[in-house]
Image (cartoon, rainbow, N blue to C red; front, side, top):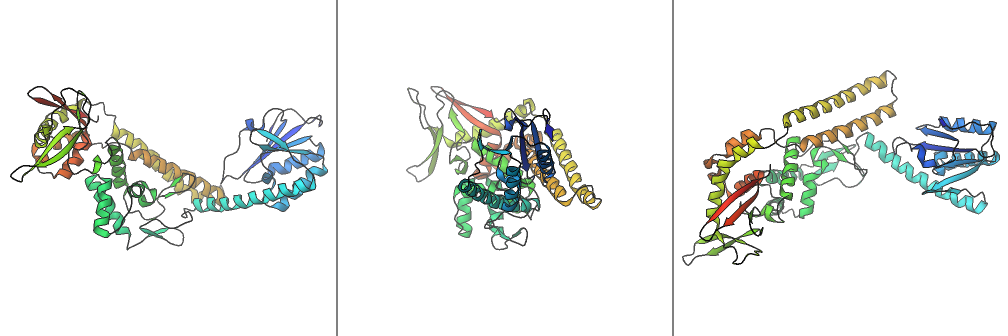
Length: 440
């Protein structure tokens, strides 16, 4: 209980009271009551301070009691009515907050019936919210249909043997080629499962497929059921999605490896890949600017020539660029995050013993476990955002020309986008040059 002043005079005394259900909200700041409050009573989880407030009112009643809401007085309409009757008997006026203002409670019969009806409705809503909150503490899935690939069990999601392999194959295809639209098309072609691109992205980013639960309040509880995607795969998916955000729309799924990467160094126009057929029926690919502002306009270039020059330069320049890059000590950051996760997992293991010894009651222990699990989920998310720790080793491997020549166009597209932000073309009257802009 916080207090200001004393109880020497009741003519201008104003008390304030709030009740907080720890499952639903945090205690309010004292500043919400405004000026002129002499004493603040605040309960969290029980109503001991409410009993103290009644005792003080019986000894020397204040002129006014401020409340955030009438339902703070009790968990049932009967309890609230009894509290209001007691305060009316003591001659205490009641003010209820309405936004930034406080509104006096009317004791007129008709007004009071309407007020009590709104209290009953609010208590019904809070009862439902509390039930959902208790389910969150226990890691029970939220209400509604189970996501595709799962079905509802008694208290958790369980794998659906007929649909989980479809989702798994979708993830593996995206990890292999890095193309969301391509993976959506693959799913429809192989399984006849038609989903939108937005649905495919929700699958890739959903905590459910990683073994976690996401609730309406935005909090994630980890390790609640069997995952379809491992933690390492999830980290790779997140990295690929971030990488694809840098590319123009639809180029992430384009069949050619240079799609979305080539721009003009002068006019900054992106270059598109076009295809034509020679008189002998041979296919010919070329690159041309899509919105060149130069006069004369930039000339188109043979796709194969630009591709070969790109491979040659990436083999020469990538190791030097990685060595010169100011890359943070990812390994040390990852170790620190792992240590924090381990420390919180140790806390979870200690909670059952604290309940058995009586140090914590079961509800408090469940609430603490819930908060620790959300912290673990946040730390794991930070870990997933980290770049690969062996960037130098990867650069040495991909600096071999044979590595690139052995890849398909789709595989080459995947690796180009791991390292290259742009390929800048500079044209001269009789020649052209190429410059790689790396992502680091």
